[in-house]
Image (tube, rainbow, N blue to C red):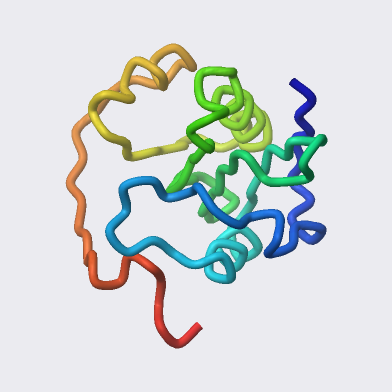
Length: 140
């Protein structure tokens, strides 16, 4: 598989993001909002299939740049899952943030083995969710 990984989000266009992400979300962000998430984050990485020039996976980080970081989204298109794309995206982020003390991610329970394989350990967390805003703020 010929995949290019980059944190150069400035060259990502709407047509490279169309379709397939946010599987099972009741109210997923649109393509423009998705691109805004990537460009507004502390850092983001994307995986691009060189053959189709489409983004097939992405990860983004919110951080204070001093001590802490949070990974809100890691997604790989279903047809590319199980091929190491997600692991490489996490590896790239962990390398980028290696000087920070705390890098947190909240995930579904069934994904704990995936993150444990990458060195994470499970912990307790509490979450607040407003599913009416799942597609993003309306005034963006």
